[in-house]
Length: 389
Image (cartoon, rainbow, N blue to C red):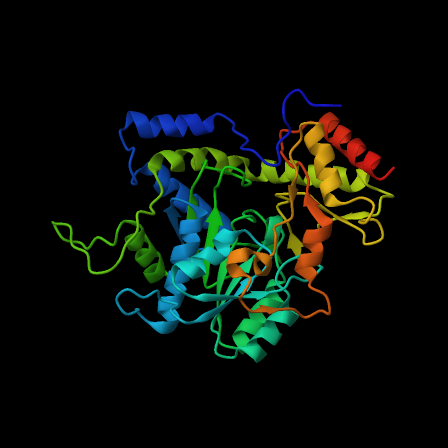
């Protein structure tokens, strides 16, 4: 069958409260980067994650950039004029992720070293991370991602970083609402970032947030995000700044979304479980997570085709079938060490095989829109089962 209306991978799910708060920004004329919506969003997100301070920013990428910049200054001090804070420094980074994670390192002229994934969560492998420190003992910064809303092996990674006196930038862009040992992601790193991009678990259409327990860090990020203006009656600038502050209008959308976070997660979980049951007996598995220690937000449901079957049923074949029925799937994130612009960077794995490349070759992201009906999902499952017939 072909759907008359496209079933998306993950599109915004709106409820109406968003308009109320956007209208409030409009009617009070707080249309810029200050206002009640921003204040409330910062307060509510900090409370949800369990940190003391949150700074609303224009995008998740800007949050990552300022988190990484702050980490570099904390480690190495202020740079020379015209230099990034990570100039000539290596940074260990999750390999299987979106480019924004690594670009934040490049913005500060650092050199990303990619750490392979492990199979239990598809996130950074703690064993590979330890090997990386043995190879590059001078490294003092790790950028960690929670892929597709699934928490990484945080305790193990933190133990390795503590052993080597390294700080962590936590990229929780995809995992807002997920938890590890009862604590929300976005509060485990020394510097933390989340995203409210249009496809995330809750959205502002855009927007991001820097999260911390350190008031000095929060104040510094807030200052940088408003062009580093000094407290003077004229425009005084003593350091580089950025136009990164969140709009009060965008904050209104986020504010209207926050009450629906748990509902969205429950819907995403139901989608994941329906796929898992629907694929019973097929040579596939769903994206894994540590059920003992973590609760994902199930942002995207993904599947991995068994090695025994992938020669006959490739991800491309399934994605083509989804396209034919007007449903959106997507390949797994292509590992960063395979990307043209990062191909010459160091890559460290703990296994005989390149785990991230293997997952990329055999995996795909399934339609995970929480407005998808059970009947639509059943049709998608049937189409995928037909690929294996």
